[in-house]
Image 1: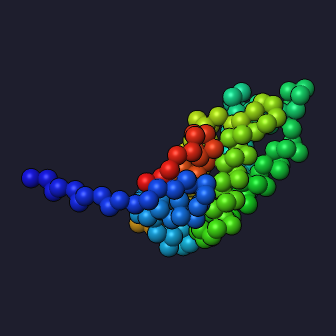
Image 2 (image 1 turned 120 degrees about the horizontal axis):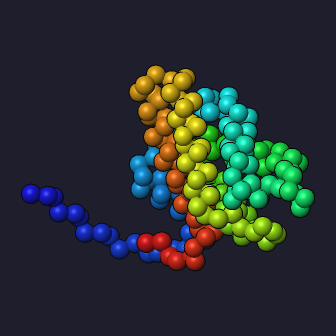
Length: 184
């Protein structure tokens, strides 16, 4: 017979944007994320930072839905903007690799989410399905690095930890796309 679930405790709700460190901590606990595997595999990730960021943006440029965010008015790729975006993605990757969920970093994530989800200039906000796709592409690229550079057990542990962390961060990004409501 299945075990009965313990009754849930009543926890006061809060709006995620008002306490990002708590929101991220709660999500990390919910998915069972330990930062030890992130920290152990961080050098593997960071040694491929430029390769990862270039591959991701090269992928975006291949598809009209995502390429539109990196084009000049004449339709050519805006190389200056692309390089700025690669630099920003590299910063995010470096800070993520530290797995230090500080108040500053948690609000940095929220500001990045808002910048993607509320872009006031043409062509507008990045659609949320492209944000989900970008996280998927990142997860896949990281799994490939871990498979090449780590033993099978360490690669699996690193992939699982990074997948959890990226999806916790994706939950922050989704805050920019849905009306805020209290988290229970």
